[in-house]
Length: 439
Image (cartoon, rainbow, N blue to C red):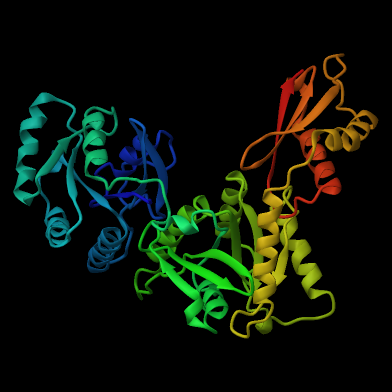
């Protein structure tokens, strides 16, 4: 179950500093100048065995005061809709401002739990000054110093208490728990919903809606043509004329949770835009999580084509995603239903590749001669020799190489080993993790 906590408040009250402290790393830029945080940041916080996602919703920099205040209100509105809990952050050194009061009036109308976080309380005298913020009418108020960490422990205790229980499951129906889960992720407006609608739209009686982890991820059971699986669509994003950047940010949050909860990740691209930085981040996340990966280039019917266009397009894209290149790429049109069923078959083939188990004897018979013919380069006058190879019993595809000096084997040689595994065994679309262990 996805649990999201958003830090909201006017600019320069210390939201990014608190965000960095909660996630345990300096991810958001912090500066005394207001409006530093223009992009939205997200991260995961763990506290006493509980984990949840934190969003830093920084203030905007705008030319006009009116536009600035309107943008702030839009930001809060989106945060209210997408989060389970809101941290309303204020500054004890400036007392209650008009902008704080505007935030409070919006938050009071929501049904989401709110915690007032009074920042920059680093002396006992300021604790008394913080009492003025009870005038907002919220029950929960905590005084902290995000710079020093004072008071954040008690705040985290309350956050965990107010968040909904994480039952760890994606589905309430146990009969679908073991079905392949295929998530369609990507940037807004690339055709994710059109793809899902094209797949299931021909006959509604074979589709069963299942409650997902959050209201933003729609889980649909697809049961046709001897295929039974779960499609996770992350495209249910409301378009609003002035909050396009916010919407795009929250689409990343949806995609992250979908990737974490799936078996195979279908990354959908717009043919006219190619693979962009946000797509790269999603692909790298799926790779780190050990998920199967399929790339669909949508709107191919609208792309100007010449001889070998598809081949050159794919080569250029895989150069950007190197060193991971061994994944299927299909060129589709969701609108015209071009290659959409082939896409589903490819995703299921990748799902099967995830469960490929290579016998230890076969693994050693094939790979050891290759390793002995091309051994790791010696370091500090020492010869490195790999003696034994084994696939590890894990959900992700992992291999252990046992050798005498594992600490001296370079990343480039690990990539060489991965390439040889892919050449000899079918792991197309599947990330491979290699572990070096001492014999």
